Length: 197
Image (tube, rainbow, N blue to C red; front, side, top):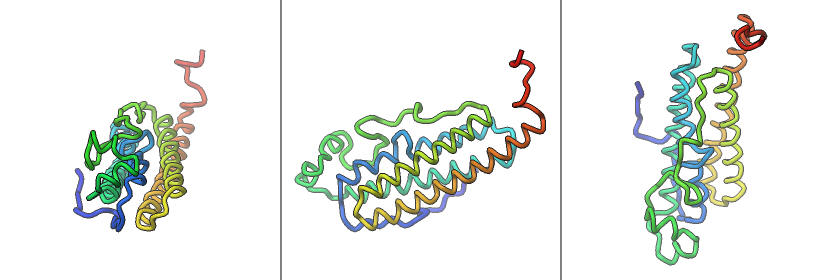
């Protein structure tokens, strides 16, 4: 069960519109390394996780990623609210505007979000390794956004999100070490008679 607080994890208060900036920040909403895919990945992987504490970790982080999705949506919306036709054209935002006006839509570079952006294998080691990689890719995307953005209101929120990706990477690393130790005690990965003939 989830408990929903009607506030963002970090306040998003963007003073100036900037549709050009919104065009690439939307990648973290519905792009291949974005928050939508992350939340669905972790909330799906938790079902096959064999250890209760790791099911809890995936649930907690998956739920937090939904909160990050809200933050990215708020950033994109605030960067595109009340745009004039001239601002839309000048920023190269017209293609998005024609399809979605200023609605926040999970797509990047004209391509809508797809489940192929996430992986769920059902293998504990494979899934946790995937999760660590996903967090690093999200962190790298936030690094790139910070390189391109000169808006301090946007950058403060993006830095918060970037820091959380680093923390998630560390938690998944701890989880992977825990699983590896438990599996090694059972000698699961060292010798598996059904495969190693």
